[in-house]
Image 1 (cartoon, helix red, strand yellow):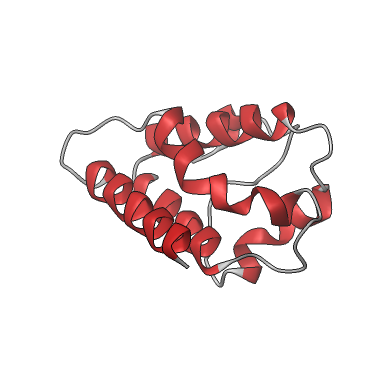
Image 2 (cartoon, helix red, strand yellow):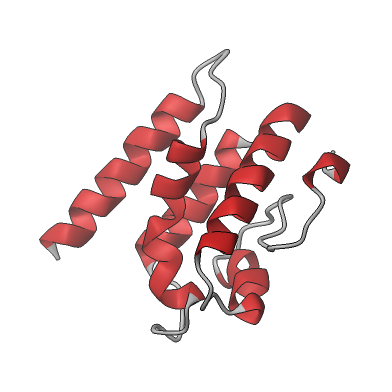
Length: 116
């Protein structure tokens, strides 16, 4: 329980940084936000945790401009490629499972230059 609270606080802190005017999104922020999703994405959990969904929402909040969306997309793509056991179906269903309309596909093969 204590670890979950700390994870949520960390996600909220990252979200706060991301929404500051003029702040450029970094892969570190995206990675921290989506870290709680790893167990779901590799098939260890049957559904995403509340901390995971909070992270997905945080990433959505970070991606407000086309440049930010493309940066987030590249970060997500790079992270997906680091996990060879990532389940593509879980990755693609993650935003819907968290009830978040994310304009960034979670995929190893997406062309991030086509994100608008």
